[in-house]
Length: 154
Image (cartoon, rainbow, N blue to C red; front, side, top):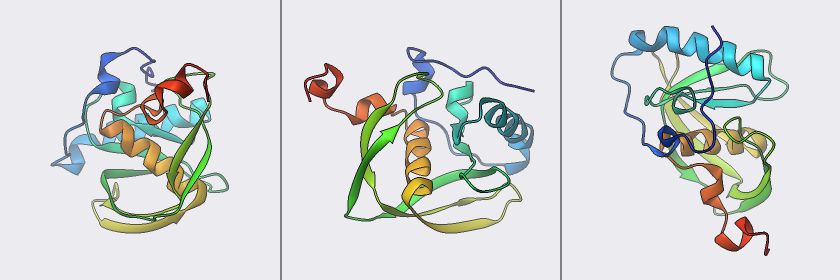
């Protein structure tokens, strides 16, 4: 089932998601999020974007065959070096912003099979994960730019 993606001013986008305690309880949500991500041809989707305040993300890295889910993802290390690149967001269609993010990250989380995982990521995959974890924390990418940039004074 394709889920409705919450847009711009929906208050749920600014709320923090709750930790998932039982992986089995969200299997259906994960499958629907994967279908929705494939339908939109996006690279990442957080549960809050489909109205669920649960710490679940689904990502599809360019060049990879399949998307995958991470439950309770947490960044455990960020590189000091940052890159500023354009990002879009399914909740803000047509808006692309230059966002500064860590070039490398290390994350931990739980895969949909219930196994713990630690991943080291660089470049676009690192950017995608940081963007989606922001959603889980109630932070939309507009909050990552200054008021001057929002007003077009950069």
